[in-house]
Every structure is written in C-alpha cells, then in structure tokens.
Image 1 (cartoon, one colour):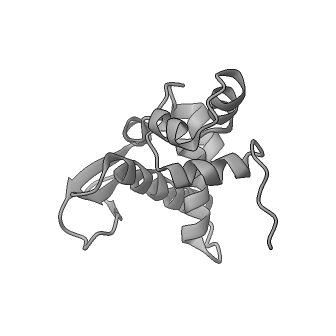
Image 2 (cartoon, rainbow, N blue to C red):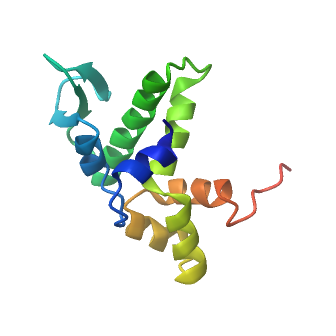
Length: 146
C-alpha cells in the first residue's frame, strides 16, 4: 500500500485532507499529549491497533504534518520496508497525503490559485511545503542549481 492507495481507500475527497479522519478509518487512534519530547510516537495499543501520539503546543498545520508523516512511516511497516532514509520517504508520503496530485492540479490549473500562501491556507499546510509539492508534481519548474 502506498499513499495514493491509502487516499483512494479512505479519503472523502474534501479539502483540506482530514488526516485524522483517514487515520481513524485506517484503525489508528490519534492522541495528543505532552509526553514524547516533541516527537510523534507510533505505538501498538493494548489488544490491537495503532496509536499516534502527537505533542501539544504546535500549530494545526504542524500537527497535521506530524500525523501524515506518521502515516508515511506506518505505510513503510505495512509494506515491510526498511528504507535507507525512512524519514525522508515518510515525509514524501506525508506531502502526497496532505496535497494529492489531483487537488494540487485542480487548484493550480482550474481554480487559478498559484500563490503558495493562498494554496497553503486552502490546504492547511505551511507555504514551504506547498512550494516543494508544486515542484514535485511538475506544476512549477524546479530551480536549476547555480
């Protein structure tokens, strides 16, 4: 299973993507708390299931990113992968989950929303992430190294 399949199976096509709803439908409980020293923890729950423990005190955007990143890590487990750089791969899947290609293309081309700040507000993510994703999906040209 990859991020696209997860979205196909569990996303309701609403924008912004409701990562907590997807996690819940995937059988994952999202718990907010102050333990964990600022880290998102993925834990097995007693009995069965998984729990994402997300630290408090962060913006909604940051919490959404943490949950999507944890989903990316869990996808690696589901696939039985041990990537060389698991956090980078999970971050890439987090961006896919938060900003699906179809949504980015629709907002950018059909709705004409090209300003990263405006896209970020619509998608409830940081503008820097929007800029990265726009380049990943080929909606803006990647900068050539100097």
